[in-house]
Image (cartoon, rainbow, N blue to C red; front, side):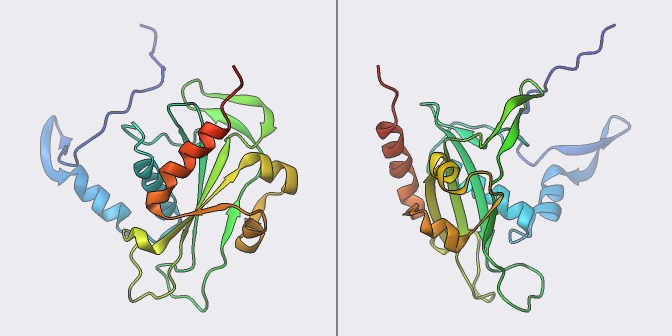
Length: 203
């Protein structure tokens, strides 16, 4: 029998799924793993995924589950490709000073999860970037679930290409020099829709 190595269609889970042993459920549920592995929302890895979720929620995107390692993070119904970047001043570990705000923005060979193939062209794969900053500086009150503590900056990829060429990192001061559109959580969707309207291809 030929092995089926097609991409697996990932189904959304509830968290109530049991681990099993010997074809029988054991007293461990998937939500136990989630709580164990994802409780630290200030960690760089978890915060980055959380930022993606926040933006996807703001845009009301019809996305069942997250795709890992795709060429870009989201595509809107009108085809706009979006890349999400996140940063924060605070970390969960003991700090001597606030973390510097810095983003990775290198041109890449995009990898596509549905085909397991890389694009031939090295470039920034998305149409726009949304830079998400957990803009809070007090560890006593920081809460990544509080959307008032976040700032969002929208920037066309064309500006990154024009001004920064193949530059791989971008500081907050460098980002602000490019005049990005600053948004609150509720302003993300209308800002993206305005960009889509202004950049529709000529018919």
